[in-house]
Length: 592
Image 1 (tube, one colour):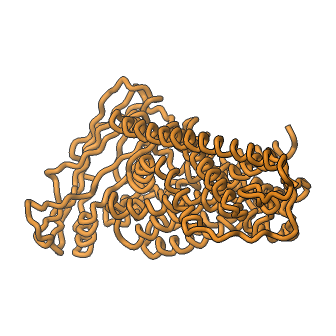
Image 2 (spheres, helix red, strand yellow):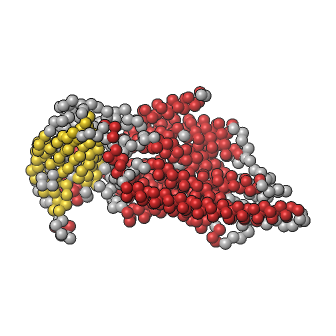
């Protein structure tokens, strides 16, 4: 194994362990009766606004003595987790019945704070031996009344824990709020509250290794699987129809073209050429803004590699339910380690396009995706700070990310750029390019860029839109998504449809004697990203109950970055497919 490869693997292992993608503190503890089992309170927030979460003790619960913050990995912080020791004592196999852990007189301000939280459906999240616990902090009693001023608001004051164990290990925990033990927080007045908890232990035969199956199986229920398989069948039918149709049409058309051009060569030499052969001297003329084009290909190739690595990790089981922050950690680390791919691809292709200023091209490549992402993060982090939400990253985490960028991403980008520049690869064009470009004939409106992009983006989007709902419900909701194999199949289908539709549109463009296909193929391939962003508008207003400035800005801000990433990645796929196709057809004919 070469030294650079060894160094890269070592660097990757170091970063993964430092960032905590594979958590060494994942609970594998064995307990004796009476042993203390770690219980951490994580966060509270409106149930319908998953990005708007706050620290548990931001609400005026009883704060026990000696509250300690849990040390968190990078991904946990990015995920908005802020774990602190909880006020309950749930020792192993130690049962308790309605034990009071706190008596408190709630002031008018605290009552008002709790009422606002209950009104917004605040939930809490805790972790007991690394198993998640969820629950609502209160309830609204409407009793058939339509006027919100007549609603009654109650705070739950008694939580009942039921814990299942197998020998010396914790297997499952459930929390239920006692619906009869309530504190009325409807009016702004001081209220006495006595907070209690009950702990019941039950033995189970479930082995420790299967204790997370309960959460993983929630997305694999029969009715969910039927919809997922319907999604795949729908996508496969789309692919088969599209590829069959395109293959048949293109093969017949190209066969006729090849026969016609062969006959033309045998006929008089002064016969005028037509169709895509007519522009053979212009089809490989390098595009405008070649530095931006090469940078887009570099960034798209890096994001494609990142996606493949994420799928590999998900298929081997790294992203099991509630592996806190593992996905965020993987995204940061793999993006940093794959920056060399972006540098190499962009610099190599830029030099093939006879570009001279490769340093500027490298800077453009480094900032093309990260620049908009950084600006979006700065704005959204400021919003989160203003809301005092846990989504606001601490200064130390920002420093860590900047260090990863400075010490890993940038050097690898430069090294990749130098390697690409020194590769001395030449652009493989099967026909010579003329000195002066031909004039493009007037074309109908539907052959312009925007209608073609709309046509190109719709088919790939139609192949994935059913699966999109489940992904959105997981990322922007509380549903668990674990069927990564189905998602990977859908991703492959997306790539195939994108490649085929781009090839077809490129052929029709060339047949109309329009030789400026480079940017068009990239824009047509990437246009699915615009359709996904349009779906965001539909999902936000029709399929979710998200509200408020913070949640709205987080949803549309980060989805804009994700869709932009899809645009770059699928644009690269579309262009590469079109380039292979164009090289193939011009290699198959004899051009003067």
